[in-house]
Image 1 (cartoon, helix red, strand yellow):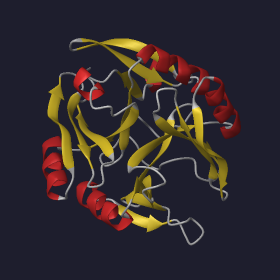
Image 2 (cartoon, helix red, strand yellow):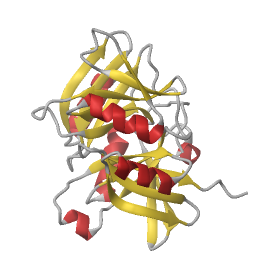
Image 3 (cartoon, one colour):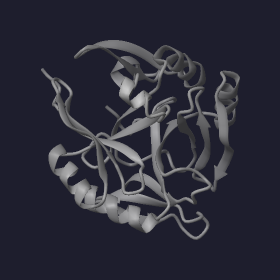
Amino acid sequence: MLTTHFVTGAPNWIDVGAPDLEGAVAFYGGLFGWEFRSAGPDAGGYGFFQRDGRVVAGGVETAAEQAPPAWTVYFQSEDAQATAEAAEQTHGSVLVQPTDVMDKGRMAVLADPAGAVFGIWQPGRRKGVDLAGRPGSLTWVELYTPDVAASAAFYHRTLGLETSAVPFPGGTYTCVNPAEGGEEAMFGGIVRPSDEVVGTGRGAYWLPYFDVEDTDAVVTRARELGGTVTTPATTVEGVGRMAELADPYGARFAVIRSEPPQE
């Protein structure tokens, strides 16, 4: 699971774009107990979601012509420019060129060859989120893509990520970890969508998981707040109880109550 011991290639930031930021703040505040704080007059409306005073995510209002409502996962880079160039050289694309964010860091938004959008964060004064792997914060990420092997190769060449296969109900699961820390630093997985999902033409995407104390209660609350349940709550033995949701504007995310590690 994720921690705030950030290393190259590990997720260190996440934000959501919504056409109605006030509505998104109300939704996630009601769901996770988050509070929203503006990043200031020079931040273009960008702000921070906080839980108990610690930053867990970012949020910004986006116009329809900019991008569809979505969560974007950012990965740590020592050099955002070099990472963007590596992505292009491996048949990815640069959607937002590397840009300085005041003195906080340097960011870019990229897409892999299958079209999955992700971000790069080169830390400055802002190293990343303040809280991860705890209730109400990011704890896991999954890439849904039609070609697991090709995606694993792209992220290895671009971010240095490593993969490993672990037994999973119905087959194996491809886990992802940064080079530094090995499998002990595992933070996510790569999954081929079901044929039913592929048929919808949804495309490849990164799905963030937020840790919760009661998955079923969060699913119920999400419906009450105007969200939708795209995958009902399911228990996976040895992993936890999880569900995939979408906020009122269509941004997809998942929640999980993880099972404690076995002794």
